Image (cartoon, rainbow, N blue to C red):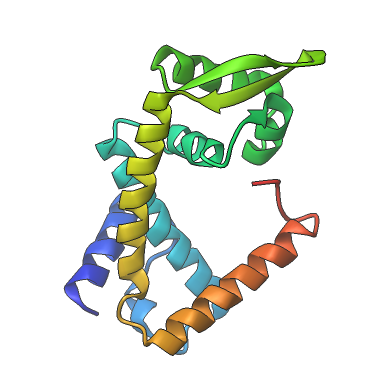
Length: 170
């Protein structure tokens, strides 16, 4: 295992994420164990970069979700797997920091949509750029063919999960 991979394993282990074990480099690792270990690595990176940007991982996710455009509070609650009331606390903190804002939806007095502020958009872009670069290191040692196969397989899994009952909307 190269130094970058070792650092990522150490980060994930220190963050208490996943079941990273000494057999992580074993080519015979089963799919479930590999996915759990990969999840731990990704969550460790995500958490570390969130902290560097003075965000919680949930705040970082909110900003990244909102990069695609305004979302309704109900849609965000489904995305985060929480009740709308729980999302209100997250939104209160994001608004206090000037990262996001709520506004009414024209034509529907009860509906509320959430958008990024300029500061929130800048924070989201900076966070997303740094996460993308660090996550790119996870596959940088793969051949071009293997990276493409990994990308297409991951995309297929995500697409299938989004069309089943296994996924939320984000």
